Length: 398
Ligand code: NAD
Ligand code: IPM
Ligand code: MN
Image (cartoon, rainbow, N blue to C red; front, side, top):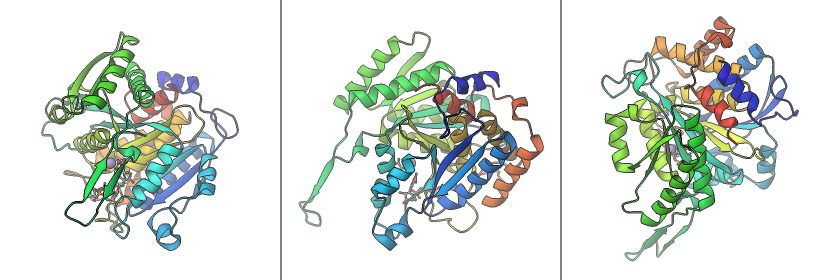
């Protein structure tokens, strides 16, 4: 525990009262669409219990954003709402995306808008095999799978450059540009090395330098230059296609994977799948300077195919809630949530094969029961590779 606690003490995250821990934090909650609100409800309740157990206050403010709001008002997010969000210590997001709205409108207008407006420069996506959860990779054991994908979070194809001309004609033409600046690439790579230095000291750069030679060059140059400053961190390069097969066949070779935005999106669904289900994967969109809030969310989307069935697994959202608290410096609280859920998964299995069919709410409640039963999180062994350790390490990187 002590290394984790130390990491948070060294961090810069003061709450809205200007204190480190023990005070009041203002959390913006955007449930969003589909299963988003179903899973954030459970995450919020776990966080509230953690706050009660560890002596601080959480003030949640719900933001009604997403498809319903858009269909009713024609608005995605206005400047006043963005300003209001900015005043919070952190954001908890469920998911956005709705079959009633054209693909991309909500995703770009809300998630990408917030990530870029608040310069959430890197997206931290941990995945590990938790004992009791069955991976689709036969015979995978927990010691062999514990990775973090560090995804550049503001650029690449996601920067929005491009055009579509002559739509609906046989001569329609679309251009989608990938933007890669040294500033954004270098800060992402440096972040990956810093995180690896707090873990198992290895970074893999993943790209497609054999075809995307210009973007690839800027990534390789930054990677080589940053690596010089970290002589104790070993590093290698893999093309993204090969990286996928390496993840499936030799996952133990990976510690931190750093990559551009689109590859990171895809690879983090793969790592989520390997860990036993998309429903279990959390992520943190991190503002590195502290001048705007960071945002925590499950990796999955709004899952319209299971909305309202009670079958959405809240694990990713609950782990994201733990990451949020770890990032704010409430490490024991984060640890309590994480270990309670790990224990529930140990007895119930994960969302996929071999898991019991508990409802979203049942899993949330079981996690809370486990938190209350254990009491003192400081007795748990966090051993440095959990989402709590990652998020509190991350808060010391800025
Ligand atoms: P998805 O992640 O919503 O779902 C993919 C599959 O995983 C579905 O079969 C779904 O039922 C399952 N799944 C997802 N989360 C689960 C959970 N918690 N428990 C159990 N099963 C779960 O991806 P999709 O179907 O490609 O996209 C649906 C919508 O979500 C689209 O509008 C998409 O743009 C959006 N989306 C949003 C985010 C986000 O908000 N961060 C992420 C991905 C997709
Ligand atoms: C994710 C999602 C988003 C992304 C979409 C919804 C904008 O897939 O968070 O992984 O591509 O980043
Ligand atoms: Mn995704």
